[in-house]
Image (cartoon, rainbow, N blue to C red; front, side, top):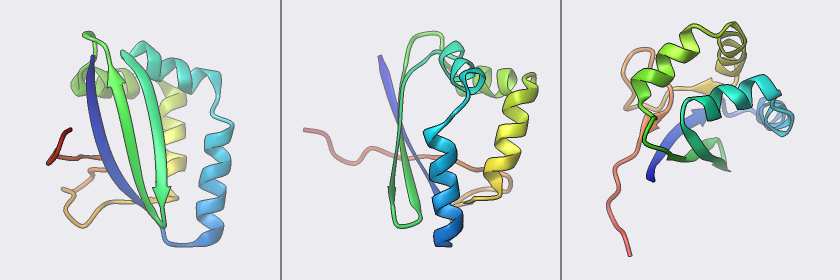
Length: 109
């Protein structure tokens, strides 16, 4: 099992952050299925202020390229991602069009 940790910022607006959290309390079965079908077995998202931190555990079938291709072919995921971008903003270190940034592990116990 491999684990990835990713970061992203939200637009720093309390109302928008509240709406974003509400959407994530009611994620549709179709979106959840797109996540698990890609080989993601655990996905947790945490928030501190407007910074998001995602932990993903994946099986051997997972790759970011495969997930991107699956998402591009899934109309429901495309709608979800477009909606979420209303609330999200790229980290200052992000490349053009990049959302979630893979974090480098700097310590392990």
